[in-house]
Length: 420
Ligand code: AMP
Image (cartoon, rainbow, N blue to C red; front, side, top):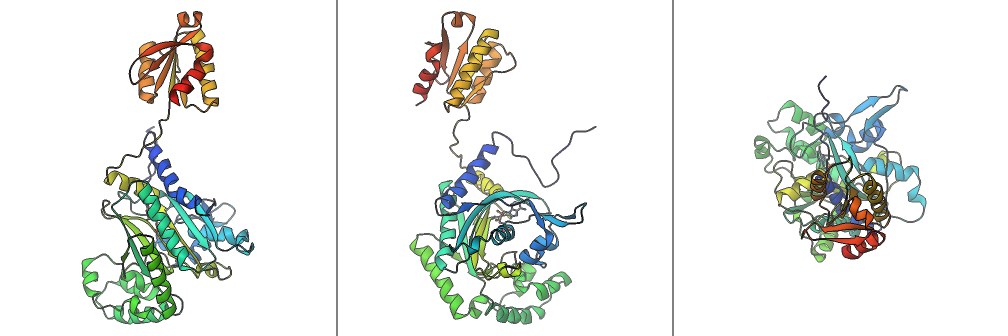
């Protein structure tokens, strides 16, 4: 029998590279934790209807890319393709919005699933860190989220990313624009698929990347010209707050994004070193989503940043994260007695918070020192029968190669002092 492989469009995170993913998740969540966002975790699957109603029946995410299935008990479920609908569902279910403390600010981190055509940067299983601020209409909240994403990317050392910003209008002005756009699009030479899209989700046609479509879109009505006064003022305030915070952004009138629930502010973070899958994160305001999934009116805003693509962006910029050494001390026992004694020392070191590892499997000195080297440890402790008879262990500095005996009884203290 041949061995198994990870399913198509997925990959495994394996040490040492996996440490980068953890560091990226930490870097993205740090500014959120520092800004009043509480951690939320929801199931990996939900009732399929949450997504078809929330994300939108007409979106690719729901119509083509969702892993939907029926359980043995007859429940219709789907692996989550995105985080916002689930987080809002959970907040409503727990009545967080009724605790009299709006906005409810939440952050999350997890796996998402989309049945996409795999390529570099586009997977069927990927991970996101996201944030949602639920139940307040305030341009400062939109600005806050964009500023925190900018801060997260910068803390990782990323520089070649750009922030694209647009307003999609609200339930007053968007329908008027939608009609005007549909009128324009119906007069173009387009294939059947695109014609269908005009009727279901005309804004997505603006997003079509094909040059023959883009050419015809010159002169299309632009949403900017249809925004109502309230949306215009709101958008202007978001822009001013970003500028005041020193966060550069680009106005992108064509930015519509692939989810139906967005209103007013929409934004995307793109990285210029990633080729076609350049979006490293995205988000926006979704004032109507709560009502779409059966809740009260709760204007909200959020984003999700892709962990996989952020790691690719780091590689594209040649950034090596300074990751803490996984092992500080590596123990090399020579013989049975030393094995018991040094295992005790390693246990004590670990309890004292020192990252320590051990040569397992009865290796000889040469093999064990090779493991010590590979571990990246700063110090090795080596002991054989003679050392133990003298009540010492040898402490070897792995950088200089210097080795000196220390009393076994003082070994833990001596190592901690040297590491400090
Ligand atoms: P979206 O919900 O489509 O706006 O996605 C938000 C972010 O998640 C994107 O900017 C990507 O960084 C990431 N992402 C979305 N889909 C995928 C995928 N199939 N593979 C890898 N990352 C993805």
